[in-house]
Amino acid sequence: MAPYLAQVGATDASLRTAAADVNGDVGATTLNLATATRAAIEAAAPTTAGNAIPAGLPGALLQRVMLVQSDLVSRWAALVGYSRIEGTTPLIRTDPSAQRALECLANGAAAAAATHADTGALEAAAAGIPPIAVAAPDTEAAADIQILLQDLELRNLGCAGCGGARDTALPPVEWYPSPKPSPISGLPAADGTVGSVEFTATYAPAAGWQITIHAC
Image (tube, rainbow, N blue to C red; front, side, top):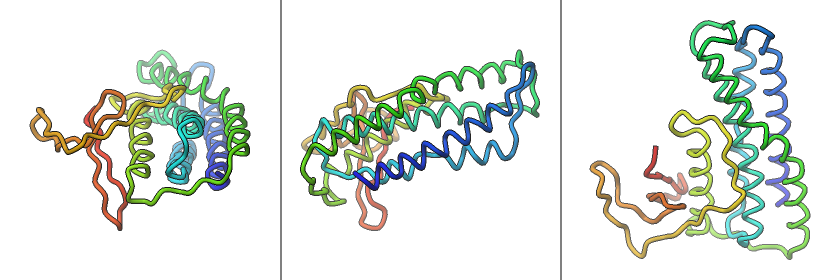
């Protein structure tokens, strides 16, 4: 777990930097979006942390990992929502786009407050189990990580979302015995479900698992 925890620490620091920049852009009567703030938000993306999650973790430990990852994603998505301010800044706070940006920022508050404790709980849990053999990259166990990450991102950023979704319970991933044709025109055959939503998963050695979740 050490590589993942190192990336969590780095991402947490980047998110704090971006949040501080945003706080500097929020005035008493107006909102701004500085070029440096936008760059800091982009640099805080938790993608590298997600890619460091090892495949094949036991369910209870994977739950703790995904809770920590969801803290990072929720916080980042809230900042991304702020960066979607429309029009030329500064904007007065009563502008609809400014109001939406402030609502997005609030969506990351619970995750920001929980990150430290959730990370500590993960560290303690990981220290209490013997070393785990990491699953091969072409296995369903490896695909499951990418499916959970994609599902998490969609719940935080899909359909114009901007944070607030945390994995306090692990969404179940179920694989069909064989691909199931989609009743919706244009969608590929589904390989299984995450939660209640179908997904398609394809593997190529050079690219790894490519996941398509059949949702907004």
